[in-house]
Image (tube, rainbow, N blue to C red; front, top):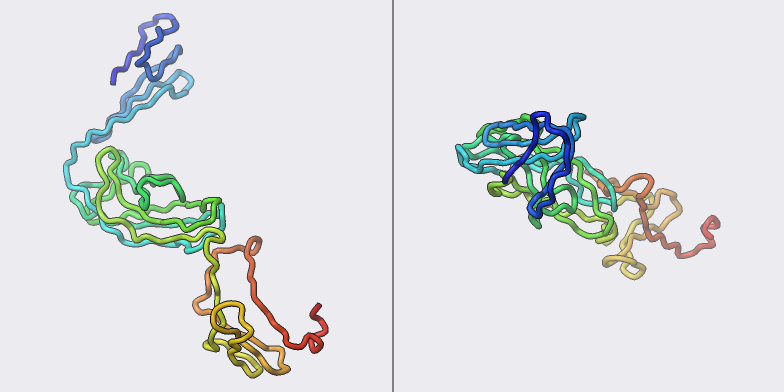
Length: 260
C-alpha cells in the first residue's frame, strides 16, 4: 500500500491519472493515523469533515490463543412472516487466552452457510471500546429480518477474529420457518387428549380433513370443543397478519339456522 498526499501551501491541481490509483481527490484535506493495539487506521479527511478514504490495517500477530464456547441463544423465533423482524441474542464465552477487543476486530460471524447475509449482516460487531477477558461471556444482541421468500433458514453463528481466522464452537443451529414453507398444525384432532366438551366427545375417523381422525361433539350444549394450550403456542403471527383456520362440520344444517 502506498499513500501520496500534498501540502505545504501548494495550490490545488488535477492529479495525473494512474491505473493503480484506487482513490484520489483534488481538495484541501489532512491525514491522520490512529493506532490502537495491533490495529492502525489511516484516514484522509477534507477540511469540512468529509472522509475521502479510510483504511484499517490489522497486525495478525496475537499475544494469546483465540477460542470460544457456545453458551445460549435467546428469543429466536421458530417461525416468522416474510419481512418480519425480531430481536435476538447469542452468548459466547471466551475460553482462550487472548482478550476479545473491538479494536482488534473480534466479531460474531454467520454460519450455515458461512458469511451468509440472509437474516442479518454476516458480522455482528462488539460495542465500541469493548473488551472481553478470558473466562468472560459476551452477549451479542441484534435484529434479524425474515427474507421475503418463504422457506426454512438457519440461525447459526461462530466467533471470528476478522483478518485472522474463525475460532471456537458454533452456536446451536436453529431453523426458522418463514411464510408458508410448512403448515403448522396446532392440533390434528386425532385424539381427545386435553380436549373437553359439555357434550359427548368422540373421535370420528370417517369425517376427517387431516391426520387420522376428527373430534365429534354430540349434544345440545354450546360448549362443544375446548382446549387450553400450556405453555401458550407462539405462532410468530400478529393480529394484522395472523390467520387461524379450522374445519367445522355440521351433520344437519337445519338444526343450525345461522349457518348459510
